Length: 185
Image (cartoon, rainbow, N blue to C red; front, side):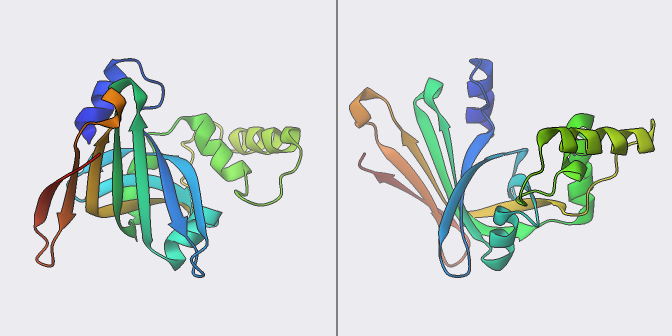
């Protein structure tokens, strides 16, 4: 997965880390939106959400999700399904400190998912928060959390050559071992 992200980035594709995240609430009503995959690790794929946002509530109520990463420049997509785990404050802090300061301030100024005041109000609140901090680092908003999807199914689906390229699915069996299967396009 990381190889595909890196290759898409090397080919100057905009947002190679972007993924469509599909979740469902406790009544199985689906929702999908784009998130940024910050890390691809052996334990799974890491992304962030405000726990008070729609996706945050859905991930906590129904901790199962799917991701779809699409790289048109590579004629490739990957579909990942699995359980989602809320990560520790330490993991959230680690990636929070890598974010741009303006993005950190925005996370404090915006009550994500709530009805929005006019934009100047949000900007004014962010500027006030920055003024109050001075040169101090912006602390992590406690509602801004890391989530990790732990895949139990991954499918690589090439999209080129008239969609006649073989797909490959990896699925975990009951013993946690990955099984590989070729699929028709």
